[in-house]
Length: 191
Image (cartoon, rainbow, N blue to C red; front, side, top):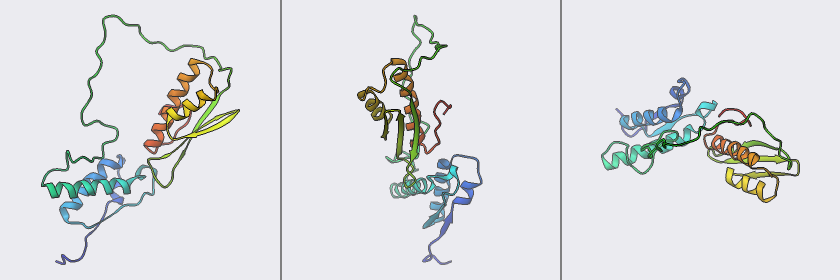
């Protein structure tokens, strides 16, 4: 009735009331909003599961505008909201004729250079950045990637065994992934 008045579209309540990752829900709601001619999208980021919803709606709205301009579906636009799934799967390895089955060691040896406690400090302003914290009795290292933190630990000679370096590499990568996906992290816990 009043085309000059912008349409306000509230997506937050739907996202908040579904036990579904917000990415797909926000993209779908944005598509509906675009079809309805909505000019304003609204979502809060109140709960943990909806953190990042504002950014998701922004990217989804860019996708919808671009697809409207191209008169196509919101696919193959050069931008996407894919995070955990792949659009195209890479080639998997084949099982060789001869191999050795991997086994975990029963015993763990403490590194003579000392232990390292790992944690994260999420960046509250941006959900895709933060810091990895590696605390050793001689120093505390802060970094944004597992590689940088492990390289620094190695350069400072705070790691002296291959077993410890391998363990730290696994844990630091879990911490980096937790930051990337805005998840919590606890050392030695399953991700």
